[in-house]
Length: 249
Ligand code: ADE
Image 1 (cartoon, rainbow, N blue to C red):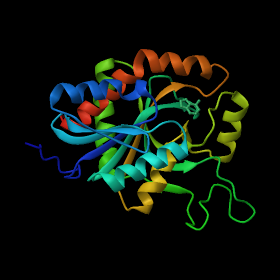
Image 2 (spheres, rainbow, N blue to C red; image 1 turned 45 degrees about the horizontal axis):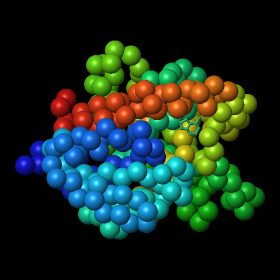
Image 3 (cartoon, rainbow, N blue to C red; image 1 turned 90 degrees about the horizontal axis):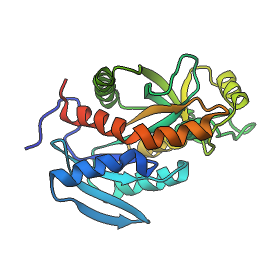
Image 4 (cartoon, rainbow, N blue to C red; image 1 turned 120 degrees about the vertical axis):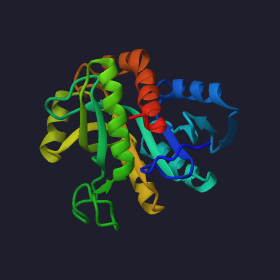
């Protein structure tokens, strides 16, 4: 029986991540709970099954905006999903962000999109917007889940606001400063969230993006990122998604 959580859509939830380390524990939990159906489409493995009492489709999206857009579009077109949730890690770029903090996006923006002077910098050509707003009910649910998880860990803070995406691994203090200068309200940088936002906008599909801070996008990022991914990312994703899906707050 599907528990009724008023803030979550009734149908299956599509859960995406960019790296295997971000979803390996979720897939393990899904396999442990019920039989899982695997479909391979467009070189991607879509796992349908039950996760903490809810029907879900879990898929590894790959890295970058194009990979994320292919995966999200396939998920929407080939599976009966009612919402998309992207989980993974990000570089913290706002002052006061620390490794192990969690960010839930209120909106997402492509920081490397620049068709100026034809369109204002960051604006998605012909759409007239530069950011896509996430679903408030989904994001509220994720934020509550993250708060509960972080309370259990005993470290890390929850932030809500703008997450920016681009096809670049940001790894220098100068680049972070430039991003802060042009997008002062950006909290974290990653490589997929805004692509999910644009696809979901095109299909009128609710979405949410949750990121755990793995690095500061500075000169140490190339070391900090894989270390966090290996040591913590899977546990954080599993723990937060478990609270989110089971609505145990
Ligand atoms: N994901 C995690 N850390 C990142 C960074 N520094 N740049 C882009 N994407 C990331």
